[in-house]
Length: 60
Image (tube, rainbow, N blue to C red; front, side):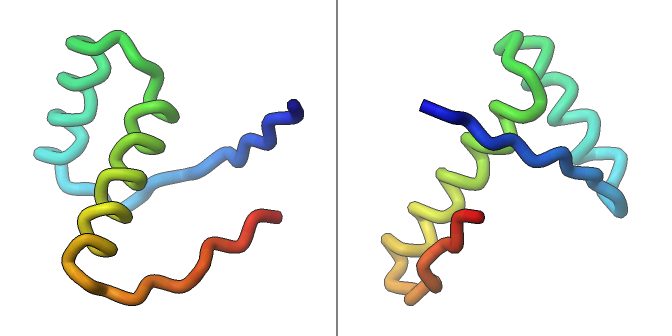
């Protein structure tokens, strides 16, 4: 199985969010990429559960 990774730059994030992300990274010892992936999956699932019709993701 081939894994495709995309490097992301995150700007315009309030210091509080950066601090929480750093705390989660330290506590869980997960890399930032895994934390962001888990966050996006949880947010996606929450939107779908609330009845939002999200578009199908496009995998490049």
